[in-house]
Length: 318
Picture (cartoon, rainbow, N blue to C red):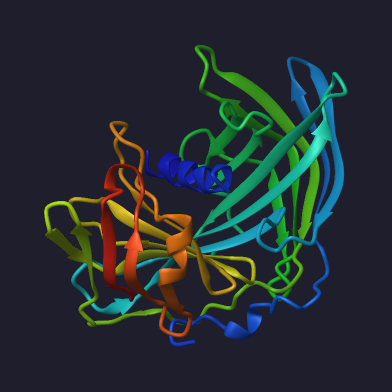
């Protein structure tokens, strides 16, 4: 269940979209011209004895929406302990468009996830998704702890971040239907970054008492909660995501930065009762980020949805 939730959280981020160890020199300036971010696919899918070729060679210059992503995710030590954030997984994702058997253009994602630093072992999770329909994506997946993720060879350049994955009759399954559907994946897919990924050294959890406050303007009330990051993910050279505070009334606060600017923030409330409240777009400028300490300062940051009469003040950090 934990592995399933983990891969779903990565998927949801795509579908919506140096004190801490961050080498700030890896962030490109707006005027810097970088090589394109690239994905090349030479994959074959076999389903019901029919073979579909997914041939593609795509690239983008948009560093905010890369086609090839290299993600490193770290988790904090226990809530009340000082210590080093530990690497929890490495994730490699390839996005591309290719035509199906009916010559229709489809959008695909291939993702390979490894537990911690051992990239020589079998991947923990491998999946192929058809995301042509954002509201109804089709996913084929394998888990090492269940069916296994066999016959996958991953080659990674530790300096550039470039990689390729080779599949040899790798079995993936769609379990979202009444009957389990199986496909075989063959061939190769590769990705090239525009710039080497962020180099992570030790990220130390501090004993600083970070605190963030939710103020309600209607009844003049406030709610305090812990402002500690419990998870940090680094993608490519310029994207960092933070999950902070795991105390009531909110499960956690999510913050995303691109080139050291806050571009998205919302509360993750794991309930279907109400949508997760988001920071208003014109209020993101009131979130100041320090990339050397991984600290965010909130100054009257306004929210929408069920918290449209509320705003945030305070600090979150390590």
